[in-house]
Length: 217
Image (cartoon, rainbow, N blue to C red; front, side, top):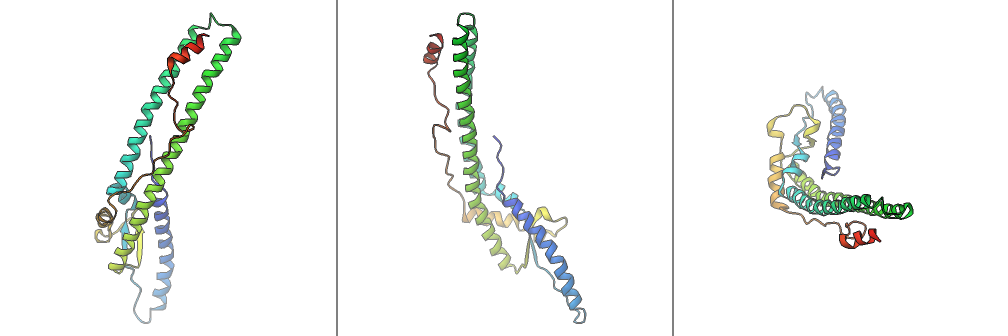
């Protein structure tokens, strides 16, 4: 099952790009205004790869592991359900010659309904997992942004850019590793609220013998 990060990285990138666009004219104006004084505003910049922070942090890895485990467990249950349905379909096909057209059509529609129920359950579970992931990673994102703000204050930075928005930068400006280190201490783990089980999100365990008996009637 594929997961993706919430909009934190995108927001950080857009913020960084906007900051670059705004900083350019501002610096140009200040330089022009201060020509006579022979001074120009020199930005103190920090660079952060927020995607790497979320991916490498203990909390981020923990969220990924929890959701991955839940997804794998659910996938196994879905696979069992699909296998049962496939066997039921094969059994029904074998009965085609002994059932009336109306009886066969009725049982085929019932089987199709089972497939549709399973499909809806899988979609509901997928949406629930995505929501759980986003909520958990948002907590990690907020903690990371607070740490970035602290670092900027400590180092007297007046501009923080997303690494994805820069082409060249001095290594000393990149504080990604420091952010990860501090984040691991401040927030080593995050509780993940798994989607609650419900009729719409949980494949129904079926008794194949009862289903097969119903098909033969």
